[in-house]
Amino acid sequence: MSSQNADVLAQGLKPRHVRMLSIAGVIGAGLFVGSGHAIAEAGPAVLLAYIAAGALVVLIMRMLAEMAIASPDSGSFSSYADKSLGRWAGFTIGWLYWWFWVLVIPLEANAAGTILHGWFPQVAIWEYTLAITTFLTVTNLFSVKNYGEFEFWFALLKVVAIIAFLIAGSLAIFGLMPGSSTQGISNLYATHGFMPNGISAVLAAILTTMFSFMGTEIVTIAAAESREPKKQITQATNSVIWRISLFYLLSIFIVVALVPWNTPSLMKAGSYQTAMEMMNVPYARQIVDVVVLVAVCSCLNSALYTASRMLYSLSRRQDAPAAASRTTRSGTPWVAVIASTAAAFIAVICNYLAPAAVFEFLLASSGAIALLVYLVIAASHLVLRKKREARGETLSYRMWLFPGLTWATMVFIVGILISMLFNPQHRSEIIATGLLTLAVLVTSRIVHHKRSMGKNEETLALRS
Image (tube, rainbow, N blue to C red; front, side, top):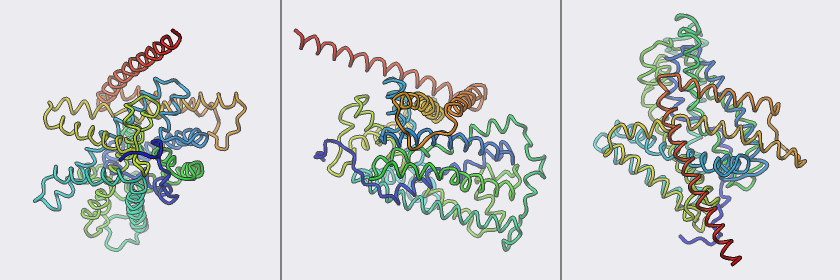
């Protein structure tokens, strides 16, 4: 696997790969299953939570796109934090983001294994988990085109499933769905009103919905491995508003219109399955299982890709072991791929061998990383835009209403983090993420101090 390309990533992603990545990047198992928890928490007013979370993602993507179009980089926001806020920021947010996706790998693999075990119980869940993870790791090792091709078909299936649901749901609302036991939009207000549990429940639901959108930023990482990164990022960012509106807001609207928010099966079976069962769609559970299986495999595939590219970028900036920047002849960072998968398996081993509290802490430690990433993106944008304007650079793609909207986004994110601290359901996440961030910050200082000392010694030796 020796490299003959100076350890540079290949530009193997085709426009259709990046286009489909951008379209379906926000569609995960959280939409099909997890949204049921948010609906049960806030009632029909969960739509307000999705609007707030979606608006935040749109603003963050606009800022990130401005920076990415000006300087495409596989390290994305970690590289921009390095350039704007300092080495400590790029190091810290890069490693936290890598850790987030490393933890996603075993969780999604286990979810896929659980679904397959339900179909074929003669095979153990861990065997499915191992087989799926190994298969996707091997495909990611060959070339980035493999990742793009798998993700293209995964994404296409998710999009087709959602469009079919939107059509069926719309027919049911207008009373045109044959055999449906529900119709109309009365469930938006009939059961204790639109906001049955008050504004506090909506604020709590924002925290739940926020993490459903994690992954939209992957397109700025992937586009760096395409032949026209600036064009691909522009197209992806311009379409993010309709993607969120169509896939999340419209589909959740259909669910809360057709299903009473306090239906017990929303928590157990998920929003899509519950709505389909009330529409009397044949084999609703089996259909949703297939779609969720595709969604978790897609997320696992993206987690492997994203973790490896972030580790590769950290290595190129000398913030990770140098070996992690080694690539194959096809331009794939094979060491970073294997290291990320190995770290995921270590997390799984901790789940089996270490006390339960250890793995619970590991999971909780990733709870607020998405918000920290968003906060760093906004802060980096604030600094880099001012630097570029001071140099007289002309930007082809700009964030709206700068700097006011950027500052407002940062204040909103800080407000969410504070609300997590005072919310018993999320307090452990903010504390665990805070402790992890502190540990990474300390490590950053130690690493950079040693490197600085080493350079000083080399300079003195040359002078003498």
